Length: 97
Image 1 (tube, rainbow, N blue to C red):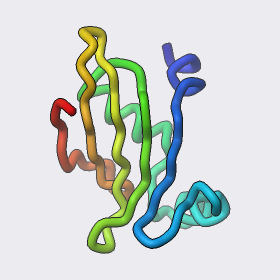
Image 2 (spheres, rainbow, N blue to C red; image 1 turned 45 degrees about the vertical axis):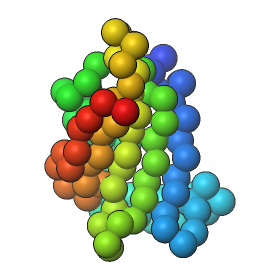
Image 3 (cartoon, helix red, strand yellow; image 1 turned 90 degrees about the horizontal axis):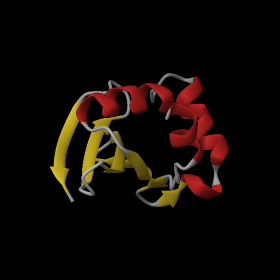
């Protein structure tokens, strides 16, 4: 499922005030500088919470904290929202969407 899952990921990188979707260099710099974890690590952490298909991923800044927000469709057809600290990988929130 790993490669297929990654291939269906729709990444919509949004940061308050400006969009990473138009500035991939900015997202790359955050990754390179260590301010955010690689997406592969975020997937590994989120899969421990909910197994399923990634529907959407956002990277946003809230109160100076970078957050990955994932929507995951599980095998029962339930959509889950998982928010993780993009720097540490800590789970901030997990709930049915």
